[in-house]
Length: 158
Image (cartoon, one colour):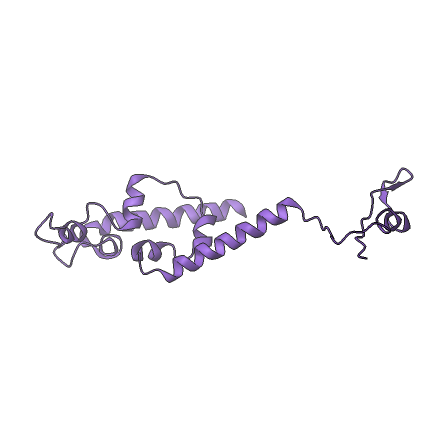
């Protein structure tokens, strides 16, 4: 005969302490039972399942050969989920590598020439963000603004 131990919630005095022991043992022993019941808190189960799902998603993300442009921006699913990024159509276009980029349009035969207007190389997302001479002023202004904003936040935090 199996005995499942169930400790009852009993309080002792006004302190509200849990008291288990012989009373709990006596309440279940003597009955035929083959089941041991352990309660697991709901939030622990939810957290574990979220972690399992995230792990599976991360594994699929790493194993696929698709979405190369998006992987350049977000190599890890977990890190992407931690970032609070407002989504808008232009950002989605950039992150997926689709949109009005010459190399993309040329791939589908919508335009004849995949070259950038700067005539240095094909117009790709990397080229526009990192190398295009026609966008160097905007790129430098953005970097300077970001640097100044970070510096001001740092000074104010001291």
